[in-house]
Image 1 (tube, rainbow, N blue to C red):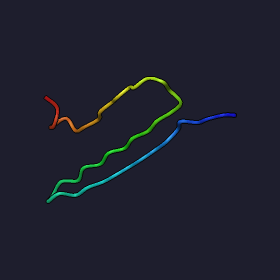
Image 2: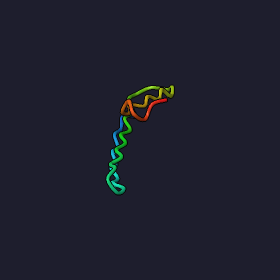
Image 3: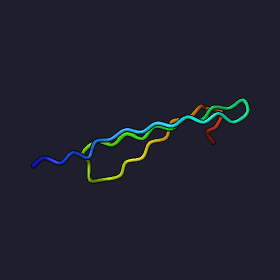
Image 4: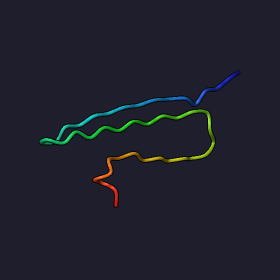
Length: 44
């Protein structure tokens, strides 16, 4: 029996003049690897 742990989710929210989008993608891994992408104006 083959079990797959692949999934995808996406949400988008608009607050005033700002739109926030988030995507979650998983592929058959046992480990957690997080990556964040944002505009340069929001980075420190």
